[in-house]
Image 1 (tube, rainbow, N blue to C red):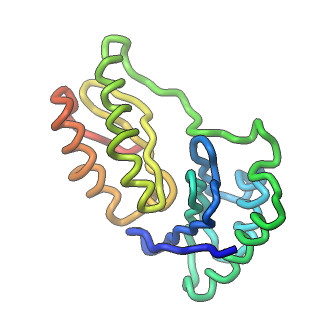
Image 2 (cartoon, rainbow, N blue to C red; image 1 turned 90 degrees about the vertical axis):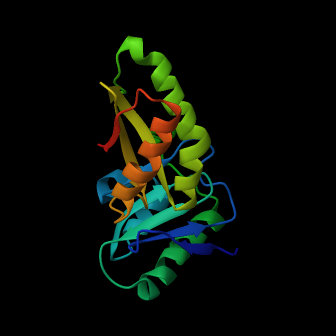
Amino acid sequence: MFIQTETTPNPSTLKFLPGKTVMSKGTANFTDETEAQKSPLANALFMVKGVQSVFFGSDFISVTKSDGEWQHLKPAVLGAIMEHFTSAAPLFADEDAQDHEAGEEFFEPEDAQTVMGIKELLVTRIRPAVAGDGGDIVFKGYRQGIVYLTMKGACSGCPSSTATLKNGIQNLLRHYLPEVVSVEQM
């Protein structure tokens, strides 16, 4: 098995591509060892000293380090990923543990058309670009012209995430949906 790695705009995060489907639907984000108990792979990755968070996308795994150098962490992370995929273990210990983009969305009923447009642009234009950088972005709400989003994976805590939100996503949404005033991260 050959696992490719790619750098991301976040210097603390590496993207690992196992050449197989990681998640067939949705994404999963693990920010601590307690959350990682839901997934044998996430749990194994958190056992590597220096791993701060783990994110599963459709065909990649983003790992963010808290400290240490990638040249020292990368072999252990690659080993954990390879062991998981060669063992054919399930990604989640329990099917119900797959908590895809959990959380209530908020918006007023009269804004349903605008929200539908926002979500369409997120799916077709924004999420593919963000996934290319090892992360994901999820719609959380819309109120009084403000779009609320959550950034996950490599995008969470990335030094350029504010610029991505304000210069990229906000400008795109405002171009297609003039009722959007600004974009904020939750």
